[in-house]
Image (tube, rainbow, N blue to C red; front, side, top):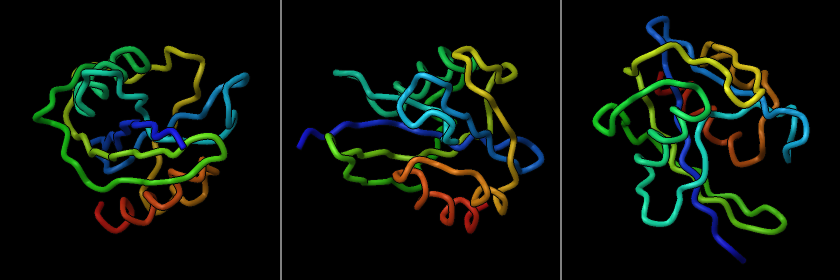
Length: 132
C-alpha cells in the first residue's frame, strides 16, 4: 500500500482557538473539517510543505522555527496509508483567509470534537485538547 506523507498544523490564535478548514464540495471527504496543510512534495521537509501550503491555502507566512511538532497520525485508508505529522503554530504574518473555497472557523480546543473530521484527524483532537 502506498504511504502518503501529509503535513498538518494547528494554528492557535492569541485567544487559544484552533483554525479548522472545511473541505469544499468536489473534493474527497467534502464537508469534513480538517487542520490546514497538505501533501509533502518530493525533496520537501514537512515544515517546508506547511510553509508553502499555508501561503497557498490561507495567504499567511510562517517560518520553520515557529512550527512545533506535537504528534502524528497514522491511518490506513482504502487505497493508501496516511502518515501525518501535526505541528502547532502560534506565530505567523497575515490574516488567514480562504483561498481554495474552503470555509474557515476558529474553534476552542474543547469544541474540536463537535466537528466531523476525516478518520486520520480524529485521534489528533484529544491530544490538542489536552495540550492546549
